[in-house]
Amino acid sequence: MTQSTSTKRPRQDTEDNRAECPFTIRLVDPKEKELKVKSKKRRKRGHNSSASGNHEDDDSSKKVLQQCAPFAPKGSFETFPTMDVHYVVEPARQWAEMTRYNSFVLNGVKYYCEGFIFVANDSSIERQKSAGPRDPRKRSEDDWVARILEIRASDEHHVYARVFWMYWPDELPAGTHYGKKTVQGRQPYHGAAELIASNHMDIINVVSVTSAATVNHLIEDRDDELQSALYWRQALDVRNFELSTIEVVCDCNQPANPDRMLVGCGDKSCGKWIHEECLKHYALMRVYEQLGKDQPHISSRPDTAVKPETGKDEVKEPLSPKETGGAVSAQHSIDVKADTVEVGGKDEDEEEEVTGRRRTTTINGLAAAPSPSPAAAGADGSKVTANGEAELALRDKTTSRDSLKREVTPASFEGKKKPYDQLFEAKLLLGPVESAPTMIEIRDLRTGVTGGDETWLEPAECPICSSHIG
Image (cartoon, rainbow, N blue to C red; front, side):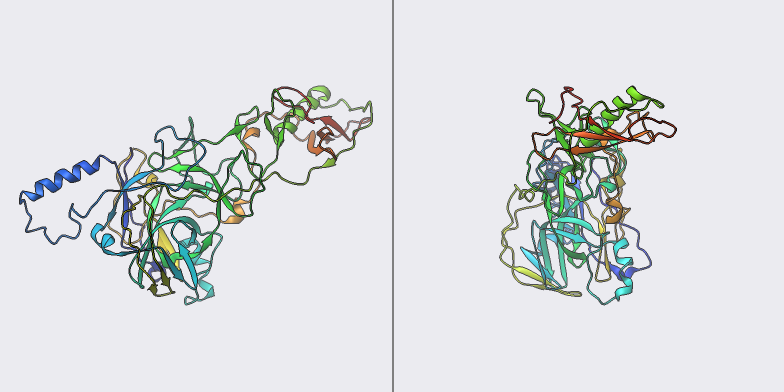
């Protein structure tokens, strides 16, 4: 297991814009529990007991805690069977002495444990400075997304949340493993509104929260409509930067992009789902092999009436499952204001614990310092530590939502030779009724070719079984 510690992000000149958080989280190996026990036994023998009796961070207070991951991806990991992690909070005693709460209220909005939130950062706070430093923070397209695991406070001015970070696909660090491949950043199968769940843990000052977030769990074998919200279907284990597997489709054995259409083969012996782009690719390849660069297409019979497909297959999914570890029982809530947090009630249960890393954030003109991703600790597992104030977030580069909505080439289409490029183009057409065949409209883009059709229809053929798709 790769172990790493959070490193603080260097302070910028805009110190007044940071939401202070004195806590850091470090992922540890479960075997470290045994080391703690041995250390306590040695201390009981009287070695330096008087000199360290009032030390705030002695070994007795650095309890190794366990967090059961609230995410259960349908896919699997090769290294660890689950996303559950062990961790240590520092300073441990100060964290343990604070009261646990079930919720907090910030700017009139109530936030609960296990809920998803948007969290401000340096990039998102800069663009809102013109609104006035005293105005409440508002959600920005650059905000981070997190899931609340625990809420603790010493008073209404000091309220903190322990969270698991959700990654935008663009934030996947270099060296991330997906199967036998090493990837970085957004992949062709990632949708515009897609997030990646992770067990990267952090503690943030709650004044960095900008709004509640709706994040659904997308389960790909369900045919319900996709809600107009963020969703996740893949997870990242930050202990070794491994992505969980996703169901693959088509003859190219690549995942589906939720924003793109899949077409099902009607042959019962096949029944495979095919990428729209793959269907068009194979049709264009057949046309190119028949006509080349100079042969005209002459229709031999009328084209079958079809209509363009304008909709998109989408899936509506339930919220991600609740945490399976020890449940946090809380009685009341904490009321958080722009500069203060009001405590509404205490959480009686102090048993449940979680692991993670630290990250910087921003709010009400206060930026929260995100913790660095384990990548910041080094791919070889070396630890990176610093006694700073703000911390380097694991997302050192924030991407706007607009850029996430750009057109993405499907994974199934990458690397395929396209000799027909700029000679022909294709559009998928669906019949007016389900029994009508699926056709592909071919448009001839060649110049200097006369005597042929400008457009015509070709049957959509399954690239796996070669049957016509009805």
